[in-house]
Amino acid sequence: MSTATTERPAPARRAAPRPGPPRLTGRRLAPYLFVLPALALFAGFKLYPIAWSFVLSLHKTIDGTDTFVGADNYTRLLDDPLFWTALKNTAVVLLVQVPVMLALATGLAVAFDSAILRARAVFRLGFFLPMVTGLVAYGVIFSVLLNEKYGLVNWLLQSVSLDAVPWLTDPLWARISLGLALTWHYTGYNAVILLARLQSIPRELYDAASVDGAGALGAFRHVTLPGLRPALLLTTVLSTIGTLQIFDEPFILTHGGPDNATLTIGVYLYQNAFTFFDFGYASAIAYALAVLIGILGLVQFKVLGDKS
Image (cartoon, rainbow, N blue to C red; front, side, top):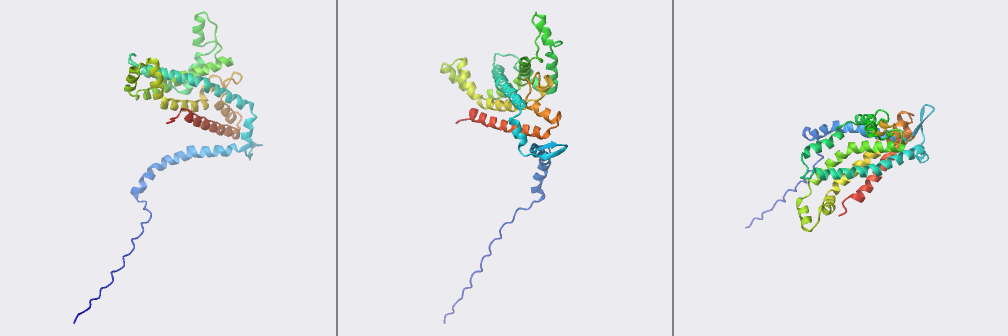
């Protein structure tokens, strides 16, 4: 007599509970707490002023009250001859002074990297020191040196029987004086950046160029310049941004004169904001300048960037 065994069905497996969102424990929350002060400062001193400046650009003070005028401040730019004068003067500095400065900086970087030059560290430090000088301080120094009656430069010229030059009172010479001041201040800074990139170029490339019969100019053209391309792009973009925002030097040297010859966008913005208290129009100028910087930056990256 056989006995049948009955098998009990296996109990159904319970589905594993879905993991919930991670709890922000003290250890997980710590990084956010450390970043919070920086974010608060950035929001308070960067994001808020930028946003409020845009709001101001849509308003105008009429009879002592801020009135919403929409895009009137921006359309006003198109018919403002002083704005176009300031834009033209800034463009002249950008198209003339910046290429000259970067060419000098490239030559200095090559010289600083040369084994022929003795005491290279001293020369590097000497050419970089102007960058450490404050903008206001070196502007005052140049205004004293280039004074038409009492300046050291004209005294030296007259000591060799040359006529005094109206450095800061003639429109052409005022532009030249501004270019000289900017070149003196920023050339060494850009040379150090280019030098850092130049020292990273493998020496084997110069040896290969020498084997192929390239001389000094050939090696500079086919090895040095292509190797400096990223640094040249960086210095060009930084110089463009700095030139479009230039304010301290023309304001201290000439206050935008003579006859608006050195009136830049930065000086004109300052005049509208803190001389005429037209903050809405000044904010519109600032946003127009920001758009212009962005467009030029994109063009420079497109032209000078890596095309590989």
